[in-house]
Structure formats: C-alpha cells, structure tokens
Image (tube, rainbow, N blue to C red; front, side):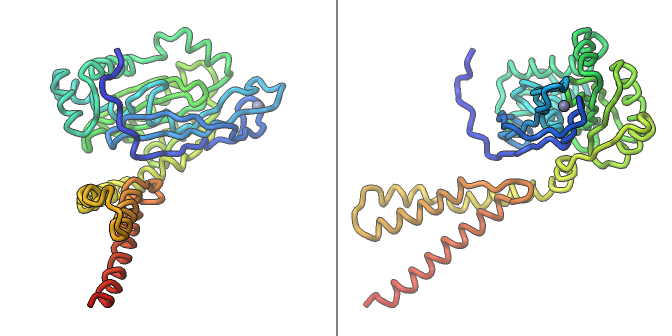
Length: 332
Ligand SMILES: [Zn+2]
C-alpha cells in the first residue's frame, strides 16, 4: 500500500565518496563515474545521500564496469532500505533490552522525530533479527558471490543508539554490500572485536583484501591482531562523523531556535500580499530574503547550517536597520 502522506523533503544532503581508489580486480585506478542518490530516514532526521560511484574501466579486468560504492554507505543503511541502520539498531535495543511492544517502540520512535508507520516497525524488527541471525551462516548464494569476486573488503562499524548501552557491531563486505556478521555487544574493547573479525574471516572463505573503518584504537588493535598484514584504511567519513557530531547537534538546535524567531515572517507576507505601494514591494523583498535564508542549508559537518542561517539573518537585520535610519532622517 502506498504511503498516505508524502515524506518531507530531506533537510540535509550528505555526499559520500569511496575512500578506495585502487581496483580490487586489477590494481588499476577506479575513477568516479556517476552519482547515485537515495533518501534515508535516520534518528537525526531525513538525509539525502549523494553517492559517488567509482568503477574500473580496464576491459580485461574481472571488475570491468562493476560499480564500487562509497564504503561509508553501508555504515548508514542496509542496501535498498528506507530506514537507517541507527533506527534498526534502536528498534532492536528497545525490543530485546527493554522488552517493549511494537506499539511502544512505534511511540518511542515518533517521540524521537522518526516518521514511521507501526507496520514498518514490525518490518524493522524482523530485519534486526535477521541481521543478528545473519547472513553468512545460511547464505550459499552469498558464498558464491564472494567466491566469484575473489576476496572481500571488510568494514566494521559500531552503532550505539543509546549512549552507555549495547553496541550493534556490523561487519560487511564493501564489494558486494553484503552484511557478513552482526552482533550486539556490551563493550567495544578490542578483545571483544577480535573474535568477530576472526569469525568473519573464517566464514567468508576468500582472502580479506583490506579493512575499512574508523580510527578508534580498539578497532585498530583488533584488526592488527585478527587480520595481521591486511591493510587497514581509515575512512575520513568516520573520522569526521565522530569529530563533528557534537558540533552538528549544537548547530541543529541553534538553527531550530533561530527559525522560531523569524516565524512571524508569514504574517508580514500575508499583510503585504497584493499591495502595490513601494513599501509593500520592499517588505516582500525582505520576506523573500528571510525565506531563502531559512531554506538554504549548509553542508554538515564542514559548513554548519545554523551558523550560515545566523549570518544571513544578521545581514537582513543590518539592512533593515540602515533602511530605518535613512527613512527616519527623511521623515518630516
Ligand atoms: Zn580493474
């Protein structure tokens, strides 16, 4: 059944580029050839992902023209999923740790601003259970895929929807996009991650060509121990995400506050609608400037949209002050 209400347009766009440039098939260079877009519902709002896709163009390469997607994509969402992995992790946590019912989980998600139908909660719960029951054990098809591609590029991500609670660790293959293993752990110490990596390594049955992940010490150590000699490439996306998260949250709150202050623009717009005197024309111009400032977004985390909005509103306010001054001197 189609959704009754259309989803709001995503507030943010996030551009992801594959870290790896070297083709896993032939060792040549893969160039970015096109973009893919997908919208994602996450715990921090709706996001539009703009994914830059690389591919190898050597005609005799076994990976000729096969897309290589940004490694970080799988840290945010499962393939062909509308909801982010963070939402799935939270659903699992609420169910298995807090023993909440589907309607209760639904209410909790709505409370955190996630637009979701109750039926989708059931689907996400199934997805969570499938994820943990996981992939590799039953997947003959997956094994065939991995064998055909001759190796895997592992990515390891920890999702922690509630600070201080379990972490959902997801191990996936960046070449096929498949989830290899997922476990919910109470800790993120390297001792606990080593067995996960070893389990995945044993189960894939093909060489691990590389690992992609963030710079967390526990992950670095675990990779060095479980997969000695395998190159571990750090993903700047992960770095940025970790570093920028508090800034991003603060900026988002500030932006919300700023928006509240200029809510009155609608009333002013209405009052000058259709009026023809020059003053009304000027007022409409200012309203339009405020409107465009509200809808214009920065590119988090490097360009904070809250700060940008503040600068633009300040420019409008300054201009209004100048007009008031001039107008005041001319008035008799
Ligand atoms: Zn190649």
